[in-house]
Length: 336
Ligand code: AHR
Image (cartoon, rainbow, N blue to C red; front, top):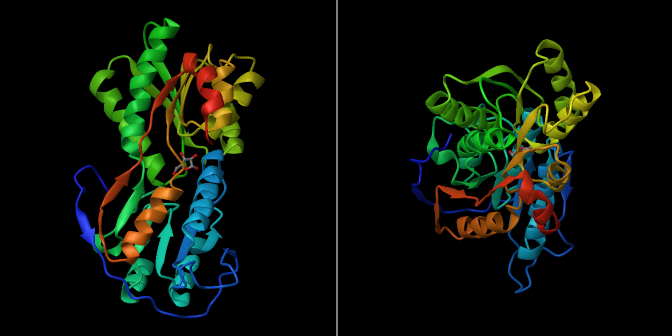
């Protein structure tokens, strides 16, 4: 996985190969002509998306598709439905087809070396977007375009301090954590960043009493929160790794006769519109933004990589944090 020390740069060269295989779940948005507006050959980008588990993911997919269209690329898009094996076969299909560049948002961090080596052997550069991987060979991908999830976890803990102060909470804090997909970079790193601040500054007063995955979905958040409330009815705080799980949890909290945002203080990550609506209704106390609108930056990087230009090893996204009292004013300006 990438960390703050990995601000190396990488130069890449590209050889475009040709081939003709199709992936079953592939959505090929190429136009009838393979020529760009200048008459040259259009850049062909193979993109394997994680799935459609959350509002964040839908916004990210739209951003990638729109930006590829805007850039005039031929986009071969596939949705892996949160399954690593689907991503691996999509990537293999892109290799066989000889796309110019492969981009993907890895569902989990491990298990990519074999397929990335196959891409490297065919001289097809790989750009990671949104999520990172753990690999034995750093040369297997060129760059990551995405957020610093560990910092998002730290920011969640820091904003929770403000939320507790605002709510006038005194004494020990019992925290429930709804984790993202097991083995996924944002789940691992958000938990790590949150714990880092907790261990450093709140070893005596904060405790994570229960923590489980809700797979980044509303249904998962609702189901797991209902179980949390059964085993730990006195939870003070919910830290949900995304808005969707937080929204699902709100339904479970209300079904248990409690008031979300008051009886249980809630901090989530993402900042999608539905999260902001819940926050403006007083049901979420703070949101740590994770920006899904990565398409334009990704297309820029893909072009540079194709042209053999040097790119930064990690191209980070700029993000903000929001407290409940900012929700109503911010809602109309939210782009996703
Ligand atoms: O990788 C980004 C995470 O994936 C988002 O925070 C979450 O909503 C999505 O499913």
